[in-house]
Length: 245
Ligand SMILES: NC(=O)c1ccc[n+]([C@@H]2O[C@H](COP(=O)([O-])OP(=O)(O)OC[C@H]3O[C@@H](n4cnc5c(N)ncnc54)[C@H](OP(=O)(O)O)[C@@H]3O)[C@@H](O)[C@H]2O)c1
Image (cartoon, rainbow, N blue to C red; front, side, top):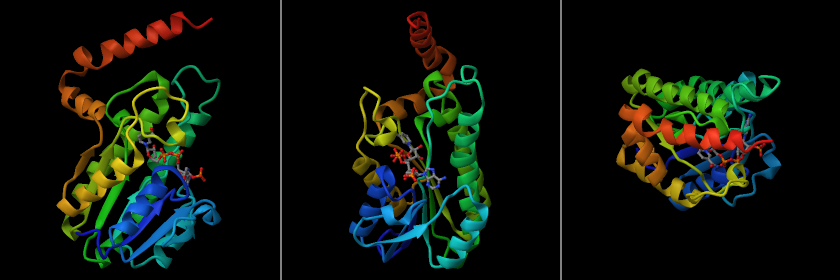
């Protein structure tokens, strides 16, 4: 599977990482790049064909899979993060929206496009995940649960779609310099770096991208998470809660 000459579709292509994914695909010689967005008029990247798509609407996802039957590289980038704890908010609205978008929306796309990719020599699926797929941080707890579900989905469809020759890539990152992390004062990887690493992985047939140092460290520490990952998170959270009036 090569990016050059592929027909790609990127969800959430109107801004942030999705816009940069679309730009990088054009610059690497993709034959066609569909830029899917809830507001297609907001897809302004040169060389990108706008398409209206809310990934939480299964009927529309099915229509788009019919319209874009030439897709060989699907980039599931669209996502939401509501910075919500599990027990703090008065309702589960944030948790439901995150699960509906990040897990069920991505699942909608994978189900609808699996036969399209099969018809186009297997192709590739890129699912945009997070370091929060690997561990729970109370700052974005319910988002982490949705990304953990999407990680599980990614590993599952890799097995299911192996027979049809589809490469399935999970891309994990800590903070990326986009609107989603705008209020956060911490090191951030550039969206350009994430996009370059992602499409290098497509060309190399690599199944996972760990896009920054924080993400690589957390993945390496997973087998000792209760010794290495959770104690500093607990310490940080206890201090934050103690300092809250
Ligand atoms: N930024 C980070 O720190 C970070 C870190 C790790 C992973 N990620 C992941 O990277 C991906 C891109 O995020 P970003 O940083 O570019 O965030 P962003 O700037 O907030 O952009 C999110 C994109 O997703 C779209 N979207 C949300 N819900 C949608 C829906 N139901 N249907 C279609 N599109 C929808 C948004 O469209 P609208 O303009 O219509 O809202 C927007 O285009 C997400 O999956 C995110 O979870 C981000």
